Image 1: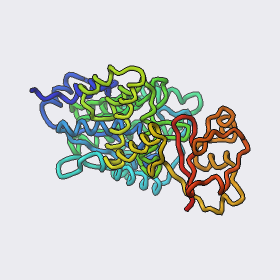
Image 2: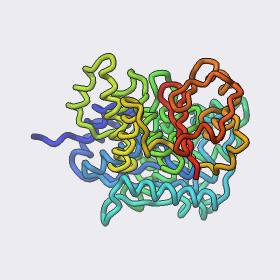
Image 3: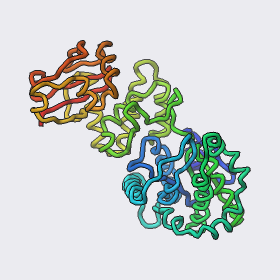
Image 4: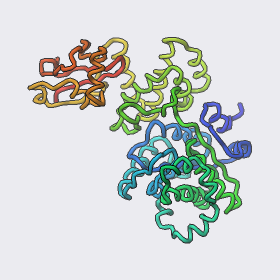
Length: 410
């Protein structure tokens, strides 16, 4: 059986948005190992579920024999990408950026093989922070026209509110990354999200002009729900890959509860479930679709956190949804017993647990019978939780139909 070209795999699973010289690139990917890169600006101390799509693409590429470069943006993060922004990013300290880059490096090491001759980490701080401004403007700046840069949405959308020269320099610097990686590692392909297309075309054109080299750029569709919302965004914030920020159970629950319209799309993009199996899941209708959601949630948590955590999350979910039983794997917060001696207002407690964001949300949920404690609906917006509510030193708060949180005494 003929081995499938990785470009066909990525297309079949729905990753690709735009690609330069598609047929040329497909031929190259099918004939030899190709070094490629994806950049990660270190704006937080953890990758998110949104980043995970690009990580999955890197894994597909490496499985097909190609060599990933994970580019940590220790230099470009000093400016911040203006793409998709209506204001300037907060300027971060070098120490903060270095810490975030180190966290990204640790996380990416769980997904890619960084053994000898395999994937590699590089940090653009190593070549950008010591650039000579005049030399850079003479050798790189001359290849960028202001007219063309202002035609890109990343800049055009900011003109009315004010675009600083500081941010205007982001595209040439990111483009220079591609030139540097081509020279140092024979890197011939840049991958990234569709919102990076203009920045990537800058690098693609710079390498072709300066080195007369055949290089390529390919973007992936951003991970969005059927309602157009970025996947991994919740009322509580982002879904993080760091288990301390988003426990495996919460990630499982988020994916288990995706819209029926999204489950097949996300299974293609976020798991390695073979397409033959996915096509079978695609035939499911009505409540049977829950089988696909459970597989999606299990597979993603297994890839991100390991099989043991996926099994625990699945067990906890089944305990709650099928039998109503308790489980050690439900999100749990411990308190000193003393805090409940005088009683604690339920709405204030739910805010502490991040189950709600405001008093008004808490009141609305209680009035609509959306909160229960140990299976009993709460109908008093002024309800107070005391020691007497705890059975075996714990209570289980249920919000809506699908969100659970256990409170225990230390």
